[in-house]
Image 1 (cartoon, rainbow, N blue to C red):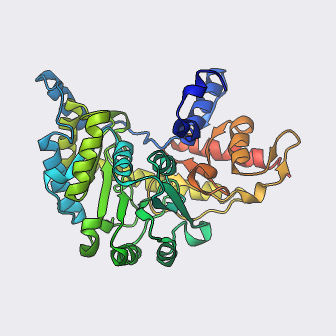
Image 2: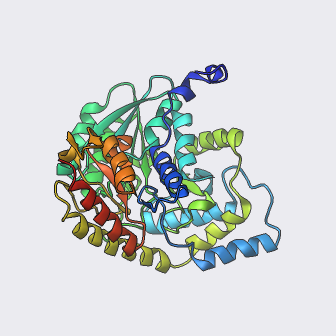
Image 3: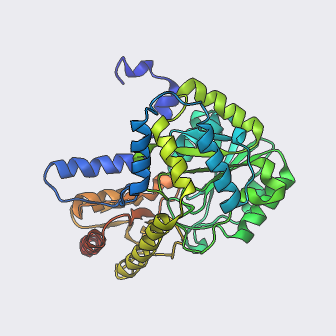
Amino acid sequence: MSKGESLLSARVQAMEESATIRMAQKSRDLAAKGVHVISLSLGEPDFDTPEFIKQAAWEALKKGNTKYTPVPGTLDLRKAICEKFRTENDLHFTPAQIVVSNGAKQSIANICMSMLNEGDEAIVLAPYWVSYVEIIKFAGGVPVILNAGIEKDFKVHPHEIAEAITPKTKMLIFSSPCNPTGSVYTFDELKAIADIVAAHGNMLIVADEIYEYINFTGKHASIGAFDHVRHLTATVNGFSKGFSMTGWRLGYMGGPDWLADACNKVQGQFTSGAASFSQEAAAVALRAPRDEAFAMRDAFLRRRNLMIDLLSDVPGLKINKPQGAFYIFPDVSAYFGTSNGNVQIHNADDFAEAMLTEAHVGTVSGSAFGADQCVRLSYAASDEDLKEAVRRIRQTLLNFK
């Protein structure tokens, strides 16, 4: 460790780098050397932001909407979010209960920093989005990981949640549709989880619904809509996935007054409000029909089916049928202990590394998501790239014995 590094805080030294960002950078580094890498590592729609949303931002800029915004977001956008929550999710908030942030990731960080004291426990349903655990630890909390494998469709059973609750439990966090698995908790499954949390009565549910519009089940269910946990739920969403607005950095949360006030306080000291013109465009997006969002969803559904067909021909991979998001999360443990004479695969990290160096396909190890037998493949890519990527993976794995 250098002299400068020794000055860093213990918490930042303990923090893991985001695996999705790290693998994307490795892919870019190889590409910079002239290698044709197909990256299936980042969770980013490959569609452009719809034109009417870009036009709304341009109109906001032209009329001079370039100044600071209120910390929790413009009133107009918070009203639009309230209406969206009411009509699409049966969630009933006032604008004072909404906090708009620089991405849903900041919304989650605001909640964790507002809620967790040193030693407080946060139950995390795994496989989980890569940043949950690091954000919880950075806020002083202790992640309690509950894992579900592919044989359970990657969904934790409610009784396991009940057994994990202790006097130190402060929070439960999960995503549905899920990143990295694409699994979707059903209405009945969410009801069972809500019953458990309501019985405990002294913990917060953090429901990450960023993939809400990329849902192949026909109906999205919000756990915060159950009456007995409305006051115990923070619902997090944003514009990155459903509206293909990743670079706009806009997310939001709706929750009880006391939590919104706390998140407002935290955000006020870290970043203040999100960009002014992007918030105006976001309000336009929420008030518009969902035609383009659903067209993207339909394209992702078609690609999911394509990927399942393609990967089914790769020996040794275990695959389920994800019901949302844009990921396939195959179990690759059949290749643990194999080698092609040059590279050995001992775990999911090695598998992801081998796919990058040997097949020139960027993936993300499942260890980053709490599932060290799997890898995440994003199908937010063209049909041609998906077909070629799976061809390369299959051809490469034939050499591992």
